[in-house]
Image (cartoon, rainbow, N blue to C red; front, side, top):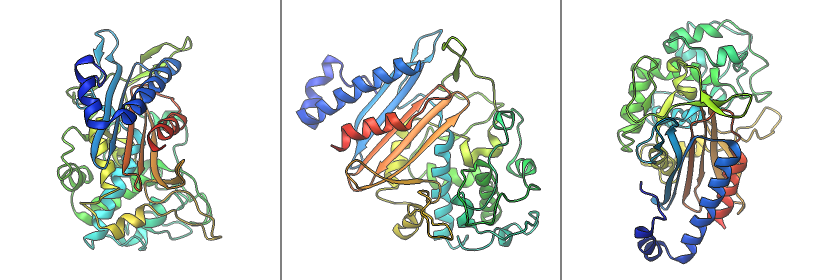
Length: 355
């Protein structure tokens, strides 16, 4: 999308959105430029919608530093990292609606060959990070550059014991979503990425969103960066995300993710009943709310209204997707730099657009 404040567009923007909305966008743009500079981010895409309509969509910086290729919000493809979990959750919801998966059934009902643990645990507990499945052991495991299928990826952790009795503690687990994707493709009798493409991306017209293939080039994809000791961006090491696609292996644009975010406000693919299950905080056995539903963090906004969001942190990427159902607002930010804390920036944009 073209730069929203180019002189040729300013007058039409004022007519379309009104002076108040333009003022908000100008404030947000200033905050974004400060954030980009402070964090040394090579390139960033920000898109915001209200009531299903884009009200701001702008690229900052570059996809490739050598060529100075500018970021374009409708074209530039980023790693979305753990925002992938939100997509997995909606795909799971579709399987629930279709009667293929029951959230309260045991994992072993769907994967009887999965190694038995001391305790049983359910699909819902797995999607809510309360099943006791561990996260990555270390950075080497997190940054593994070995192409594997989902089934092969299970070998990284499937023989490890549960960390605790399911339902008694919360701990974020990307490997739990690898197991969840194995359940989904087994129950649906179709490869996970194929199912997500057919049931989510095609209906929502997310034409630039797909699984990353580590051995195949992707058109319009950004380079991915990390900061060196001098806090200068350099190219990140390669990584293979195929086995953990459900946890963090999808590629997308900020404008495609706006389409997805609006599904969490006005669902077209899944029922409102199932959406409610995804967006309701789970509880531990002692009644404590975890602040996580299935694939979504659940909080309240500056307006004390519901907020669903997820951050992502991958090799050469940091991202955030925020959804505000009562205000009808979706905010998405994608960057091509590792290790950027996105929550504070997301909160800053929230304060601009929700007030």
